[in-house]
Image 1: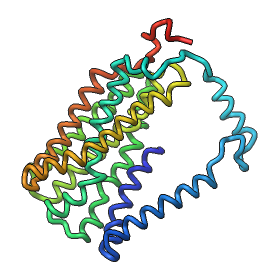
Image 2 (image 1 turned 120 degrees about the vertical axis):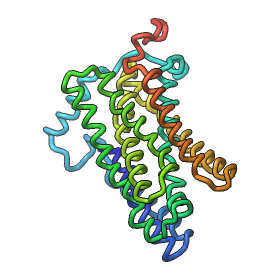
Image 3 (image 1 turned 30 degrees about the vertical axis):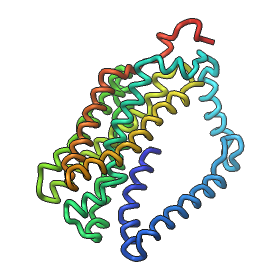
Image 4 (image 1 turned 90 degrees about the vertical axis):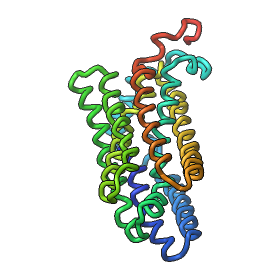
Length: 290
């Protein structure tokens, strides 16, 4: 549910930023987005409270929340970061997310330029049709998480229940590479929508992996930090490499689209064969445990 915010933000940004650029120039878009970020910070500071500090929480709700927390052991293996990095699964989480973000970052960076410069969309068409893949991805994000949890409730082993939407989603996300072989803009939008929806379908199960593999609740954040480090690396290298491929090929998007597709396939292989969805403490040496 919370990961849909990313897709909603991207979907809104396409028509909003397009309208700002058309009306006031590209500088205005940066100013408005920056101010929106400041408003978000102020709103978060004013609204967010821990459960006990929230003015409108009922005692029953507080008991439910804290009762759930009490059921989770607060102690467990004390694992240093260097110990976590000894496990192929942690590296798989990092590398898999690099690949996923390298594919998804296309929609955050070069996507508008691709539609306008390579596919001949006008600014108006970009604003009207450009948000379709992200709007559809909102539903795909929720569906991926719901499907994974449904498998768990049906008694499917946790490893299969998490990996099935991840592998399916990552593999289908590689359809972005097929856009270089079609001519019609409708077909292009269909393929981009499939790719973005599939990429989003895998998201919830991927975000659940740190909690599934962490040796104790106290290090879920550390494992998630390593995983999201991979996400940021993918977001950094993807626009750079796409720009490089464009320059080397004389502004042809064939290389960038094939790159995005290959990264999705590589991510599929990493999640399929490197990541093991089981607690790391099953293999942590005794001297590393608290």
